[in-house]
Each structure stands twice: as structure tokens, then as C-alpha cells.
Length: 301
Image (cartoon, rainbow, N blue to C red; front, side, top):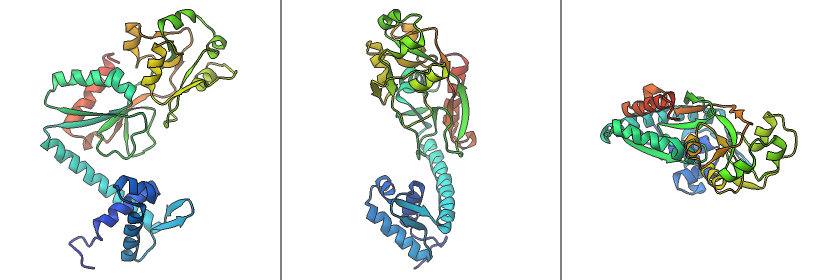
């Protein structure tokens, strides 16, 4: 096989291998690359034939990397990561300064979007793309940084602490007035709106009650997978949801939601800005990150 300057096999085989190694799944790699699992398998077999070594151990329910496969994956992951950062820098210069920031839908609606509007008033030449999703931000090199509750398991990401919130039951004004001063036993009998999330760092109703010393059973009558939906249901009088006091401050100040005292719990984790190290961010991304940190320090959230 003829080689170019760097003596590399076809880049399509390396790309297919990197995706399959990262997912440890030919199927998930195929979905990411918009090809069939058979096409991924064909590319990897071609690469293994070219290198004359086995890169994956095929198992009944998946694959594992061999020693050679793991060595190649580490090299490709690091190299692709560096390439991605350089490309992001080039795109940022060409676009006049673009930043991509991620968050949950609730963080975007309650705090981040208003903060970005205030940022634009000061720096109108910086283009900010917001990505909102209620699932972890995994494998998103296009995101400069994202707002996260609790630490991300990826050791390559930097974490800048923002604030630690308090968890309080919240409801519509009518429901809150009826439950003013209620004890934990009374709260446990109410309709509680539970969050169903992939992210296990979020504090749940059972955990909240347990941390406050309640040992009874917590019924699960209603589940949602979006915190924004949970807040909307609580506003409509459909039940109680756990309120992140600092995050939902605008809704508390407007009276749309009312806290039910006196029980509250200091959140086990902090909110963080999570992403690439500052030295790998563009000037525009660093400017927005600094703005967000200052907003927190000034009490805007």
C-alpha cells in the first residue's frame, strides 16, 4: 500500500476505529458516523489487516480493546483532540468570535440566556451559540464549556466552581399557603414531582428527605425528564417540586412559585463551568466565561 508523508493508513479507517474504541461499540460508532455497523466493522478489519494485529476483542455483548488497540486509541484521541482545538480556534477567527456554551434547559431559561443577553450588550461582536439539553454533554468538541451541577467524570475537563445552592420544596402560591410550616410527614403525603435524569448527581426527593432525617416511604406518583417541566407543573398547582433556591430566584421573586418552609437542604454538589482549559479557549470564549463568573459574584444568580 502506498504511503504519504506520515506513513498513515486511510483516515477513514482511523476515524472508524477511534469512534468504535471511544464507544466500545460498533453500533454506536456507526450511529455517530452515519454509516452501518457493517461499514464500521469493514473499516476496522481493513485497519487490523494493514497493521497485522488485532485491535478489538470481540465478545458476545460488545468489544474490548486489545493492548495494541488501547495504545492506538490513546494516540488518536489525543491527536484528534488537539486537531479539534486548532480547528475551533481557526473557526473562531473566521467567524468574528463565536462561543458555544451548553446547559440544561432550566439553567438556560432561568439564568444563562438572560446573562448572555447582558453579555451581548457589552460585547455585541461576539456570537454566542447556546445548546440546551437535559442529558450529559458527552463527546461534544464543538462546546467550549457548559454549566453543570456536580463534577463531570471526564478527567480532561477543567472545573471552575460557581455556587452551591439550597434545595427547598416549592409549589404554587395556593398550595404553598396550605402547606406553610408543614412537617416532613405532611410533605411526604403530597404529590411530589420527581426528576428522571441520566445524570445521577441531581438530588432526588428520596435523597432530600433522607438527608433531613425522614425514614418513611416516599411515593413516586409523577416523573418528568425536564426540570423546566417540573417547575411548570408546580406552578400550575399539580404538586411539589424540589426548588434550587438560587437558580429559580426570578420565579420566587415574581411569586410564580413559593418556597415551603422551614425545611431546606444545602446541595451536596456545586454548580461548575466545565470545559477545556482556559489556554485552549478562544479570546471570545474566555471573555464569556469571565462574564458568567462575574455575574455569579455580583449576585445575578
